[in-house]
Image (cartoon, rainbow, N blue to C red; front, top):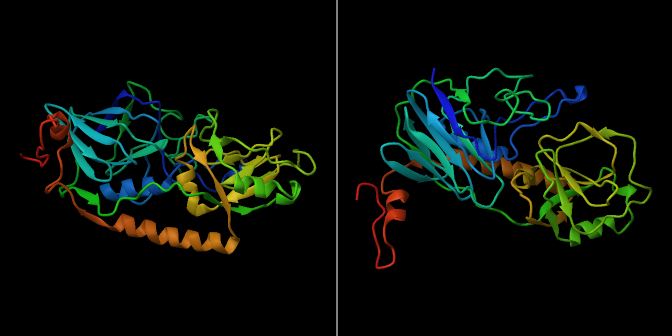
Length: 343
């Protein structure tokens, strides 16, 4: 069996797929990838099913040694590179597949601005699902690899012993960062706020707080006054809920959100914008814009078409591609150099 040997785990690297659906009535969070679109595209590059489990990397990436055979891997990241270290070092951009062999290290470097990036491996992990999913729920200590983030010394088993015989591919049109306002649908309990609260939410700039995590993004900024206090009877929590506790500042509930909560919910982030909300990190500035339910539905349909187009837009990688290790090692002060492979 081929395994990935964890040499450096990164700050918080976990196994995630699309999530654990159908168990919220029993109090089990959905979990899953903060940005399922990036996971979907990483899987497309290695030939996997759309939401095969991959590694979600928060803030800084891991270093993984190939324990045997060959492994095809792809990095989905805004910025950052994938280095294959062995007898020599090869450095590749995100949004393409790469093959590594036994003894080589797969190292994710400089994942850029957003908080998360994803590694997909051809065939996926040979791990047992919990309640139908490989997603890690670290608070509950189940799913993924031993219910926790990776640690140095772990050995992650893979389903495939050898990478398939094919050429490497890249996305023809990689996605770009979008920093436009997150679109929200007011409610379901916007009537429990002062009349001006929604206007304050949509006219203010908020900052992601340091105590944010996979459960929720806490925001610093303008207060949203309640009309009748901040305690209500607990009810169900949807993905993207913006609830407002006693400090009167919104909290955006995301992947590891609780299944019910007792604070009023002023709005819900549209499904089309949730993946980029999942990429936010502490210190990022955020604005909100209200739309109708009909607008949100149109955005979701258009987003699904766009994702399928991106995933289907694969081209051959390698020919004429820049060897970044060669380029970075060159002296660029005195003149231009070629970064083409083989030069």
